[in-house]
Length: 182
Image (cartoon, rainbow, N blue to C red; front, side, top):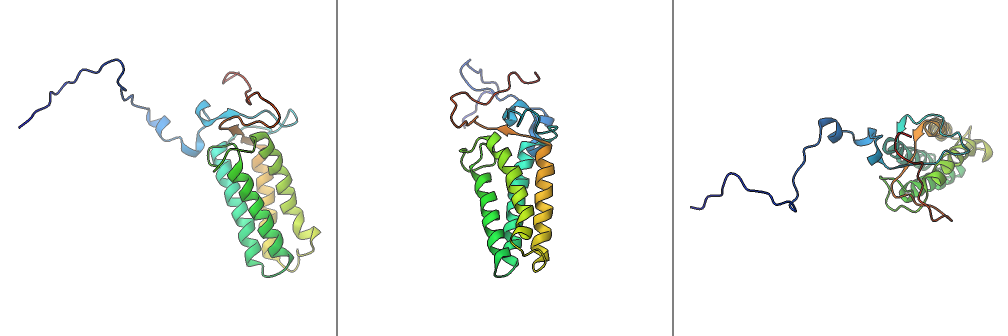
């Protein structure tokens, strides 16, 4: 029978497990620390108004909003409501899947561009039933569009937008506001 010594001396090059605090372990979607990503540059110098909603929670809400618009469009029946719902829902999903944040498939769209798309997409979702003339025929899809559009705009005004890799278009510098807490 082989026995192992109770105490094994660690060499300086071996990884040593460092326990993390309970608070650090359970942050998840509510993480606003530096580990959550690189803070986005303010849009037009003022947006978002406040950084209250963590980026990961906003990401989940992006997927939920896009799927809601897509689902409402599919349930609307044949016609413009269905087409608009499918197109807007798939565009919302596509942007979310390609944005530079933790919960995306590929990091191709800079977070600042995503923020602009959030506002434009939301306005498009709100306007579609009225501009395309299906607001009275498909009240369910109209209601979903209005709810998702308004809540996405409100959420965007208060999201702490953070990039995961700092993807930029047309610039070589990484998005960085400076030291954390500055």
